[in-house]
Image 1: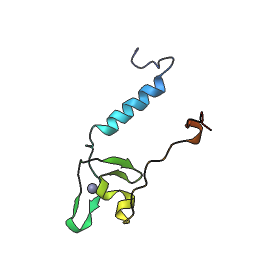
Image 2: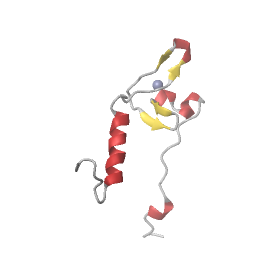
Image 3: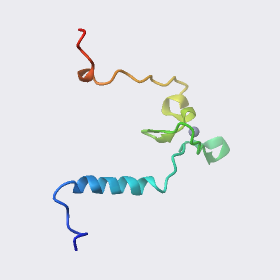
Image 4: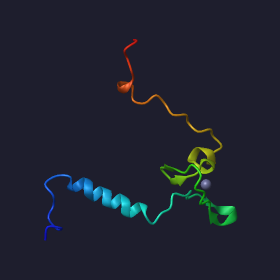
Length: 86
Ligand SMILES: [Zn+2]
């Protein structure tokens, strides 16, 4: 009975967390790139990061597959820069 009742707040956060964990657990953190020539997934776990196309190792990011260098991290949102010395 109390399990089914929604808490007054934090209910949506709890649900999001549950879904995130449920989605996370069956999947290992491994590169999802399909190597067509070898008819297998890459499955590398080295430095795997999430991209729009899924988890990728550095060799198989969307830009790496097009022969382009990775975009270096930027300074962030301008509003959050330190403007004390301007
Ligand atoms: Zn890979």
